Image (cartoon, rainbow over all chains, first blue to last red):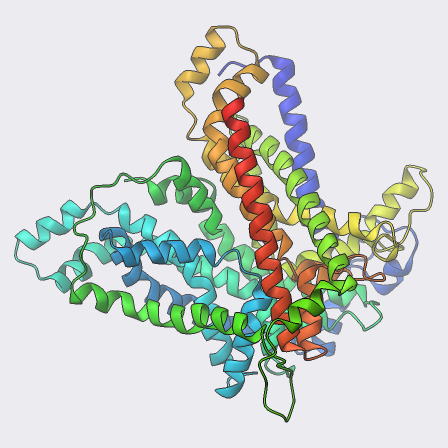
Length: 277
Length: 311
């Protein structure tokens, strides 16, 4: 479409304004993470630290069990992503290929489950997990994360299955391949990129999750990164800014990396690709 | 994230007729059960259990057995002015976040849909907030709002607009301050959903309208908006629900303070359940939240759909 020169310039200015709005808090976080205490206390903070230091990072690791928390987060996120994809892929296949009442009910549930406030689900879950002695345990948390990730994993995967032409499967069947054989050697390889993207999404969601972890994990040695991060903020809301910023910056890196890997699928590919036939 | 695909599907339903059968055989059941059982046990089950709990006096660490108390929790709730104040704050927050978020995201999506240079970079940067843990988003904005070391007050001082203030603990500024964070945090999801919707608007129609001399605004109203409407409605409805039920952001920013000015219903129910151990009462709050939000949402959607017919 042809657009006038002034209009185009205006568009660039607007886009720049958006990018500044979206980026500045993150840049400020990085800037704070590298500032020595003296600069953090001064009344005239600068964008670029005058005297950049890694002291905040060291202090953050000394104050809170960050490495251990990162390991907990990793176990929870990997476990949730793998189990969710493992459970969701077969069901998504059936939902995409068979138009049954069950498939429709499951689709309805996916939508409805978005609407419930977590507090209504967490109280009963808390009581159930307590009876099963799964409070303050990784398996308990992973179970909750899996169920929590299932709706959107199903949603994404149904789209990816629809994108695999059934004719391919039919051709394999004609060639004498059994049903399982067809699924494993024809459908699965075509679905692989979609499954990986879904798993990565589930990973990021679980890595970032806070509410369930806050309620279900009681002791510091079990807690995940987001919960440990809140320990940097004191009861009076007073926080040691430097270490807090350093730890927050580190906690974000894994999600950013994974997100960067699937970025294309989110802004372009996933949306159209997932539903295109 | 679900919303995106859903919104997308609202516009362009996947072509039907490819489904092989409408009856599931034993093999299909075998494929469905691994996911179905956890969903039933850990999602549908707890939900029903939660509704049942709201009719009991369940408390944490209690020795006597829990008893059915009928609707007592709900009648108590009716007179709980703190809860209704919290509910009101929740509504102000949800609408205050959702509406500007939609307008800003629409503008960004329209820009990203143009053939601008560095569009790929802008698209990548625009979704960064999405990838961040909510707790980190809260932490980040605490640093921005910090009265001394924060960049906001420093900018205000630089511009000679005074000394700035303590945004998050001021009675008048706390809610607006957290609303801004809410808008920021939800921008990517909304933008991506709208962008997907934009890519479905017929280009030819757009060009034809331009040839006929329709200006940008006219083209937007007659060509883009009708195609975008279903996506816009779904994402707005979902945003309202998500925002109303949001927890982590405000928990990290203000923990509901100062003086309860930012105590969203979720924070209120969380404290009731896990600080004071009133499980039954908190479950009743959850039920009331679902019920009222469903009603408000239904009214909103009906109103919107009707408005569309008249336009």
